[in-house]
Length: 196
Image (cartoon, rainbow, N blue to C red):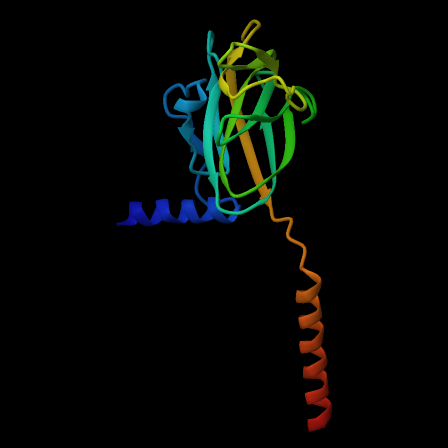
């Protein structure tokens, strides 16, 4: 029962885009570099390792609300390279060194739904079904199809990494909502004045 409640708490934290108070999600075995076989991450912090000959790691996340997703990949051992993909395996964005030093950082406005995050060492590429490759940095080219897998195209330096995720709600109140709030405050002020 306690295990079920813990899992429910993690699911609610991910759905609302808030980091949970639980420990980080730890890579189980060696995460696949194939998007269709991605590990389902259950926390907003993910810890893993890139091993010698490792093609990269891909994680699946499900968000219950829209907002700006920020992903920071840090490591004291490897030069991180990250990519973000949607539920249809389409590449959305990638980053090499925007996080300072050899760390990666990207922010992207998302809708509620399923997303995939790929991480690897420098010279990480995303490959589509036609084996066209794109270096995971910036926005993907228009010719890139749905991504099948990520793979490192250079020498691999093994090491541990941490992915830190944050989802900020971008909602701005609609003018009608602000108008109703103003009318409510005005009404409360008039009622207070009447009783005085």
